[in-house]
Image (cartoon, rainbow, N blue to C red):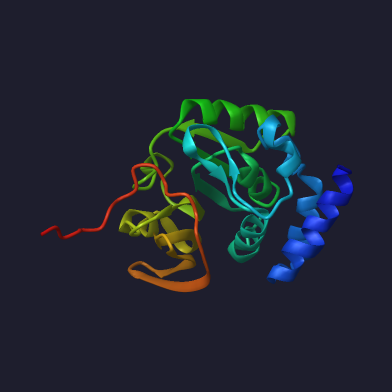
Amino acid sequence: MNIETARFNMIEQQIRTWDVLDQSVLDLLGLVKREEFVPPKYRSLAFADMEIPLAHGQNMLPPKLEARILQELAVMPEDEVLEIGAGSGYMAALIAYKARHVTSVELIAELKAFAEANLARADIRNVTVVQGDGAMGFAEVGEVDVLMVSGSLPVLPKAFAEQLRIGGRMAVFVGDAPAMSARLIRRTGHDAWESETLFETQVTPLINAQQPSRFSF
């Protein structure tokens, strides 16, 4: 496989055709080497339009989802960002090029170490990977400008929305398979938020995600 040809085809055939037209995002996909964040045994799938398996049943998001979400979040150079679910560290790496700082919370120690090693190899220094459970937000970092939830949630806890600063944006995948939607949520006031559905999808659930009330008979 020619790596640069595969990267070019990913950008042009998968991502640009999925309404990702922000040139700064497309440039980042060429700059941040996705294959360096993929487990070695799946390196040949680094640019495929699919979730890539990680340890403990977790997955990397498909490239077009990562790119579209990055575009919609419109991260600014002064932004403080919180990511729930570090995974391989790739999404944090993309965001880090646009943000002031990223705190990425990862529940699984093996994935925390994997993400840290990948980020260090890529010489990305403005990401802090923290081991912890972010399923109900991560109050330790306080309010943030941008929040990225990298696993799906059956229901969205209010704690996530309340962790946004006014003007802040959050990307989250909400629902149960097969009916999940990617949403962009903006905090517009002290007690005011706006929610926009971006697209329908299926994403691996976040570990320990809050569950809706379910009736049994």
